[in-house]
Length: 132
Image (tube, rainbow, N blue to C red):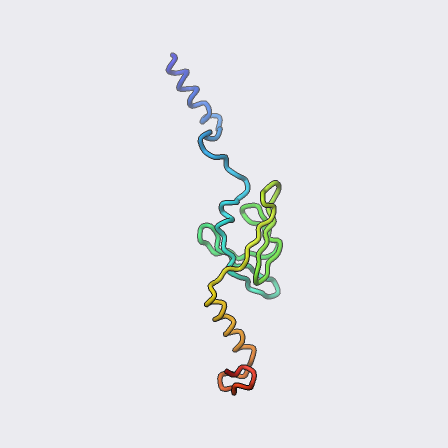
């Protein structure tokens, strides 16, 4: 009879749905997941779209006003920064990411943009716009 009572007492927390006291409490704020996000840039246009790589290495497209599965809301975005407001008592109340990329990628992108804007093409002389 004593063994049955001890067994019931040990199983009682599981039956009542209580959390494991030896595990850290789960947070309603997704700090650990958001720390792993990488903001790689934005597609600018009529409706700007942020390109983010999340904690599971999935690519996300976010627009201003979007609500995330974690509960946050996209407040602002541009080519250099993404800002997300977090709900309730989350700390910090706002997350910011700076665009991350490799220096070689930035130089390559800048070169492509300069070629397209000049309109002069490769045959331009050194003194003309777009020349070398």
